[in-house]
Image (cartoon, rainbow, N blue to C red; front, side, top):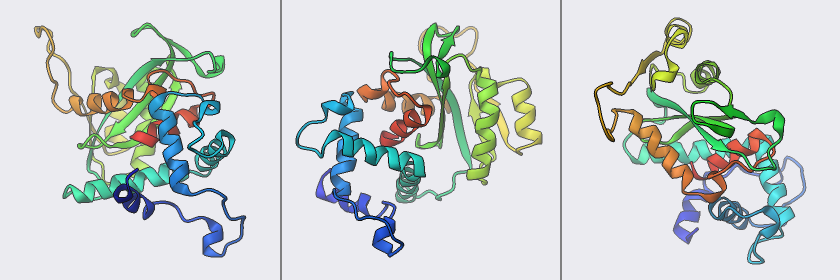
Length: 247
């Protein structure tokens, strides 16, 4: 990060307990070095043990990532930055509309068999990323499951959690895979209008679909990072944390 970027990021970082006098051992490494190291790993697609000597030792960087993942600080940090971007764009911090979709990616050998599956539609053996974005394409929520999990099944859980976190959302757009009982559930239980944006049967070639292109663009942003071109994480919450480092 540049000094200007770090100045903006530093204000959004969770404050360690020892700095607030709540106990705990002072950390031995600068947060700027740690954040840069994790972002380098995600962008380059390297292994933890391949961390360059310019950064702290790989096991210290991994311990930093693991601690933030387990305490929920990665999601908190990401949400704070997203809220600042929305405010800078003239939007309210709390969105009122969102787009939901899923992406199946191949899994590496490091992914346990218990958390992977086969997506018959995409012909992919691996995992599936279920994401919800706002109308700017910024991540609101991400859940990683086995690729065999149905979109409607995962969508019901995802929308319920989305409603708890972002209570102002009343409209969600999705593709045809989220129709059926999920629409009734969203309307009657969550008070969310779920609208399916479908491709016309007589359309040929590439066509930009209204609203859905926003979440597809977010998937494209994720795939720019080599670590996300394939799922390498042993745990699904680690895979979700990696998505948030660039989402």
